[in-house]
Length: 62
Image (cartoon, rainbow, N blue to C red; front, side):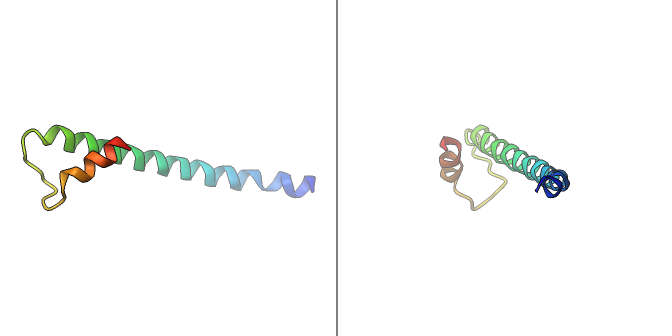
């Protein structure tokens, strides 16, 4: 068991790092969209078009 356990952590850590990076990118994109919609809500100029700004308000609360 020790030999099989030594060969695996390299692959597991690479997968975990990539998933963490992807998660951080998704969180950063979600926050940037939420704050952008929050600041643009005053101007009433939504580039996204038919999307309801209340959706971003619910996401920002979460």
